[in-house]
Length: 194
Image (cartoon, rainbow, N blue to C red; front, side, top):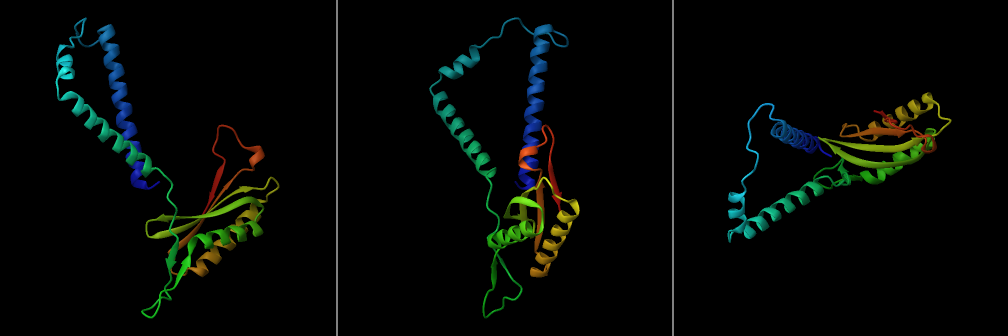
């Protein structure tokens, strides 16, 4: 999820939450008349006139279609998109273009990390973050893992990725979770190593 989409999500949630709180306070005030003075009955004749008009079904259908398109756009924006598939290398010139397959590289770095570190189920993916591409490794820490071995394996893989991409356009992120059979309940058990 992009930063802009995350900000939009939080803003919409805040606005909807405030609207629901305001509606609840209005209903509470209407019931107990703490602040305002409201009639005991609600007149719905104007709403009935609108609903009975000939244009109402068309306007309702158009509004429903717009809301459905907005909902579909919202859902599609939240789908996980695969990261970039390739990166053009600086060795490219007018006679030819040299590219590296980033997904294969992420998979190879994940295999290398699994060889060096006491981890299981390591997989590599790619993400675009601004102008940088992240090779993201997700894995579970072995129950008998040593923190020094994890740090050393992370440093080794980070150096190797930096050596392979000296222009600093491709970076490495390692996300490790606790062992699968001993998950911590009610807390975040992920450790991010950069």
